[in-house]
Amino acid sequence: MHESQIRSVTYCAKENGLQIRVRSGGHDYEGLSYTSEVPFLSLDFFNLRQISVDVENKTAWVQAGSTIGEQYYRIAEKSQTLGFPAGVCPTVGVGGHFSGGGYGALLRKYGLAADNIIDARMVDVNGRLLNRNSMGEDLFWAIRGGGASFGVILAWKIQLVDLPEKVTLFTINKTLDQNETNIVHRWQYVAHKFDKDLYISILIRRVNSSQDGERTIQASFTPLFLGGVDTLLPLMQRSFPELGLQREDCTEMSWIESILYWAGFPIESRDVLLNRTQPNVRYFKAKSDYVQIPISKNGLEGIWKLFFEDEAEEAQMLLVPYGGRMHEISEFEIPFPHRAVNLYKIQHLVFWDEEEIEASQNYINWIRKLYSYMTPYISRFPRAAYINYRDLDIGVNDKGVNDKGNTSYAKASIWGIKYFKNNFNRLVQREKEKQIVTCEWWRKWVVGWTGGKWGGRRECIITHLRMLASSSSPHPTA
Image 1 (tube, one colour):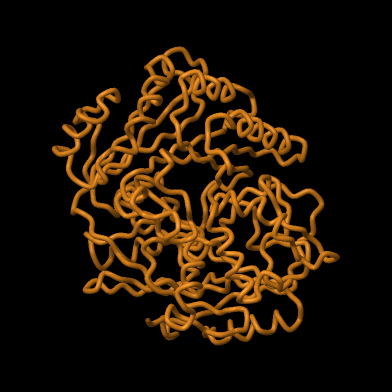
Image 2 (cartoon, helix red, strand yellow; image 1 turned 90 degrees about the horizontal axis):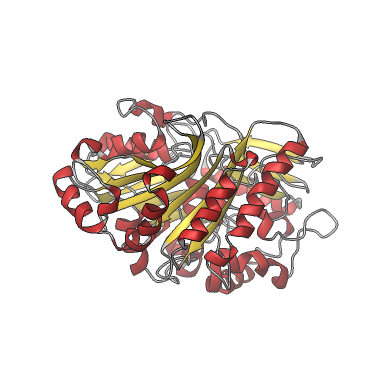
């Protein structure tokens, strides 16, 4: 199917009062790309995923149905020293990932995915096919990190970034009896000050102790260093000697191999990046936070205590360091506002397998309790959140047929300020000017979802269109 047919579908939806849901990779945390409480039409971009890499100009056009893994694979086919600063989960679709900002292990060196978008093709509210020049800079600003409610993104033009032939990775695990609390506490003071070429995140979870089989809390330190081990070791000795990094802990590899390492795949299995199926799909609930002042040791110990509770058996907390390029870019450069004042970002996660509603509610209540506990330690006024870790607990618009999906500014700002801070007003103005926010068929924030478990809600899918883009379909041009 050609892009012009998407224009027809969009116009038809408007004329018939239908909302539109666009599904790129299907990873929306609250399921908003394929669910609603009012009649809607689903655009599934499963086959709209051509990727054209221009090595000479260090750019690529990536259609919105492509996954991050497919994008990385196609770049690596053409060059071993070019890459792109997007996420580490290869089955995530670029359509939504880039729309919300998108980050990965290169964010301290090159910023977000959205910071490196230089053009786009989209269909607007009136069915017009636009690129950066025809949409204007204000709308182009809005679609890079402002969410996916401004139109149907067909393709992104991205600026590729330079990478060394070899990068260095390691994973060092520390438990409570290995001075974990003190090391995590120290990480908060230094991780955002590291050289831009060094990124070290922490994954917190509960494990069984290797000594006696008792439960303990483990912090896994995993980096990406853009260079060789001979350069990394003295840098770590100066910046973070508490971790105790040794040469034998380190492995040098290519950047594309590091993508596989981060995703948990053997580094020789590059073709797995073309697999769009998410392995081990489970129920989960997620939340996000930003930390601007280091959490005290007592505060960290309170987190560990919560992780010993029964519902936390499969819980995780991911600490993502900022600094570097993230502290250089203005919070107003694109809609994504979480920049210089933040030391690091937290992703809270809890997983479960039980299908019973009562069991699901227990896990959701646990992560809400953790979120409540974190209140004194994280950003305030607002308590900021990351749009790609969508969390309907922090606010939703009016939903349902009777209210036609329209929502007041006051109600929308409950969640809007948390995701976009001072950029929310500009996004609202952008939508008003384009007459999108008041069109009931274009609403996206209308549905309630609880951690992947539905409770009596009806999926009102009117029709499901799979975009059958043939190999001869022209890829987007500037």
